[in-house]
Amino acid sequence: MTVHLRHKKHGMICIVCVFPKHLHQTHANQEIGSALRNWTLGNWANGTKNPSGAPSLYGADFQTITWAQQNAGYLDAAGDNPNKSLASALSEADARLGTFLNFLQSSGKLNSTLVLIGSKQGQGPINPKTLKVSNPDFMDGTGVPVAFFVGEDGGIVSTRLWYQCLPSG
Amino acid sequence: MWLEKSSDAQKAKSNLLANSSLGISYILAGNEVTAAGYGSPFLDSRVPDLVIGAKVGTLWNDGFEFEDHGGFLPQDLDVPLIAYNPNLAPANITQVVSNRQVASTMLQALGLPLAQLDAYRLGDSPVLPGLFT
Image (tube, rainbow over the protein chains, first blue to last red):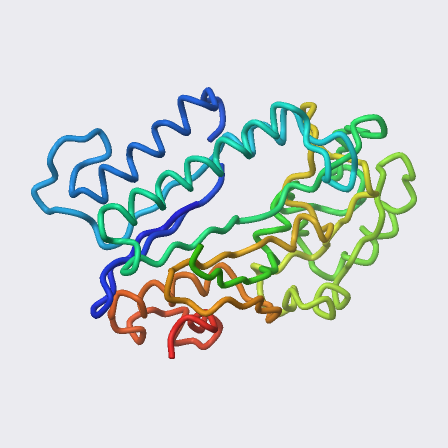
């Protein structure tokens, strides 16, 4: 995810996030790259002129990574070896981010832009050979009245971030 | 999981753990949820009465996927946050921060009044460290 903000003194800031479901990977990433460039140039995402000019804050996400994690995943539980499709999605997102940073630099806006890259939660790798998928009915299993159950938002309740400031280059 | 009565948490935990086919690794119930840092389900209705963790390699889902998604394992909870600008001093900051702090940080960067952001004013979403001097 890249976010772009404009600082009172220093110019702009930018934020980017990582997630599109049901979109072709290359197409989605191309759309993200062109949208970021268009916003920076003071256009709407589709390239038509925005009378208000460039926004002070904008962002994008790379849903292709989450799509590939869900549908291809990793070859091991450590996450060191992504499936070919996931590796491609990661490389593509990395390249798109690099292209955008180069664009910011060539347009003279990199120094005044803060780029934040984050995620709302992780998607833990699982060894596909030992993966066990089940849909247990927790609601019945408790033996007491259940008001609400949600199965995949632990990260929303308690996501811990490991924070890093990166130098130039 | 939120129960209709928070006082049923220990009973629900016992019943769920009795079913070994569910692939449950652990369950936090009632005060255990509070002790884990999620807040008190007895004082705050937003806090779940039960936090249920799956065994490694088990995925609770309607369909087939190849990754956990929003579970309570470290690889789901510990995610990176990267800030980039050519003028930033390089640093790995091990301080635990929250995504909420991104909002405060953006206001600070834009030169907007932080006091107008409820989360910042309430004190649990300070500006991310290491960006502004």
